[in-house]
Length: 293
Image (cartoon, rainbow, N blue to C red; front, side):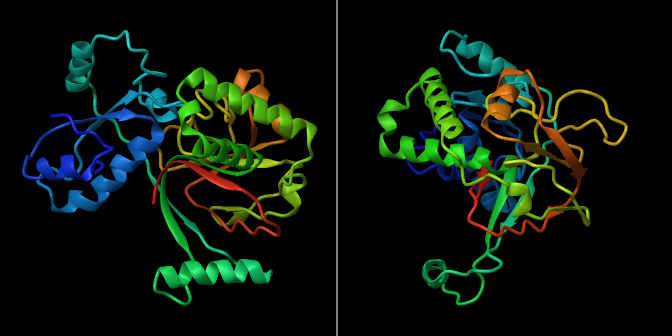
């Protein structure tokens, strides 16, 4: 059966199959659509006969990082045989994927404007105290320059979604935004002096960087690998099902461009099962790719 997610989202389809003990799901979309389907599955799976059905991906997003890692390809071109795609789904090997809880909680709110905004959000949630937001991360978490670029791209697409109708156009817009960041000084400069990070209880000494990326999968920005493949005795070989996260730093837009092109990797900072205590002393952008709220 085929379900149009524009009408009712994934829940209607999952509801129809809740009594079946065995079935597979093919999600046609990008990483965000996959995250959306997984979030709905979390909500209804506990009451279903098959709580964790295997999920395949037909990648029609821009980056398709999760599809790349899970061997569903970099992007659907429209020339593939639909029948063969369905055969691949039926015959595919089942593999595991780690998923992580991310808690974003304001620590200290200094300005009156920030206090007012947080109070509005707290009232909307019928609480006067807890302003935390909880997500489940599938792909990666970015802080600083990477998130700043993603925010600009998101706002531009929200303003005029009709223009963002192809991968080539989307990537060109992202590239142009990166060039503008190179010319104009970003608010992420000296990020390392304003953020404290702990990995498995150990605080990191951060080098001069403008961005931090916490990786669950090793495809970022449409196929780049910030962690790299070089062996290092200080770290275990990462996978997307090892119960570990990798933390890398980027020094700026130029460094990000070099990672995108495969000329360099990010700066390896740490590897561990718990990343916490992001203490931001100024307003910094953050972004989660492949998230469920």
